[in-house]
Length: 208
Image 1: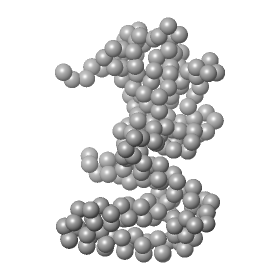
Image 2: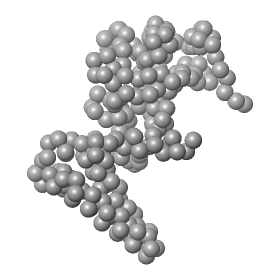
Image 3: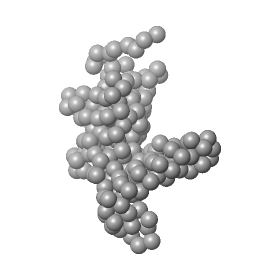
């Protein structure tokens, strides 16, 4: 079966809010598919979200509504709202402006059991911090101190080494060199003030 499009009134009236009048919300970046955060809404927060086109939530600790990004500037522009089969959970598809997490990470789910893509965003944020603070005994900080020419030189060297490893047909060697390449690629992005997310967005545009 295909997806069913709901009218606003249908969406709200059909939902199963809990005994406190709340419903859990999963927030997902519509461009990358990355899960950004988990929050709660009451009916008023949901209506404000629909009316304004930006995400509003209910804070259980403060017992009040809050507009995502009002103080940080990290707004969430709502692209779509979906409801699960049991009608007791919402999925918000958003365009994330800035980062979703108060830690400075793009997603609140930046830690995982096996790493994965979330680790890339974690590493990107860590490297950005290295560029700001330039700590001693940090290889990435050393690269940032040496500047763009050295960073791009290393990127070129790692590209060649990855190609050679691929030509040799040794999987372990290729993984090792490709990891070096990806690391230096992230360093070059940061030096150019480009976010990894922007690369993903460009790939999405090309895919269309």
